[in-house]
Image (cartoon, rainbow, N blue to C red; front, side, top):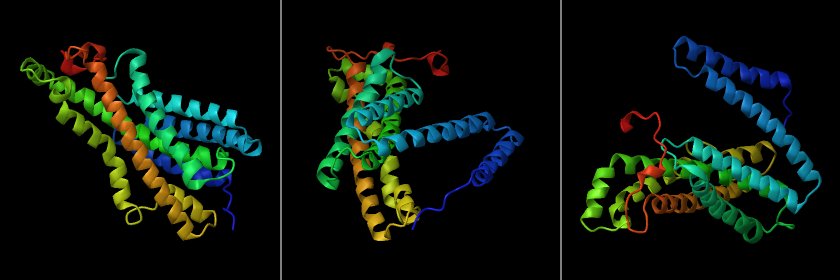
Length: 271
């Protein structure tokens, strides 16, 4: 059984729903019409482009091409993490913290799954490597972005309390212990919620795609369980590494809080 192909007319009918949603947004003055249009255009262009790239990769399997595409995906994910921060860390360090944490977690977990768990030969077969890495990066990116944003924002809001704790003799780690825990929980909560409701409230995307492609529902379930566990592990490890990186950047070796490394332009609470 093969997936029924969709025609441009089918996609246009689906796009008409976004047009109606944009019109409703304009009527209610939600200010989302432009964002919807841009998001829809980006989705269409990016997916069509990646479809052509994957077609070439599937036809000509090469570990170098796979590595190059993986690094491009990682760089794009790092940029998205920076864009989602209310108070991003200034300069290259802010990008490196998010990107480095995703590299350590997502690439390690993906490699483990490809080599040890799935065991496909060769391990870098694009049909397995690219979708798996993409799902891990996408979810880890969300966790890292949420965790970093919670960490920096809470540190800013409670900066006077943190400084008082430091004056009383606490170390940086002791002063921000609760904030660090809250930030890690914030990054982990979306994937935990997804795992708790998988199969009851929603059918995850990979499982749905395999069923539509004609795979046995039980085989699809097994792969989906694997993917959910890998995503949870990747998100958790990535969020922890990112939060520890933020903590290290915002305190110097003498345990002094350094909020000057944060961007704060245009934020009312800075006044």
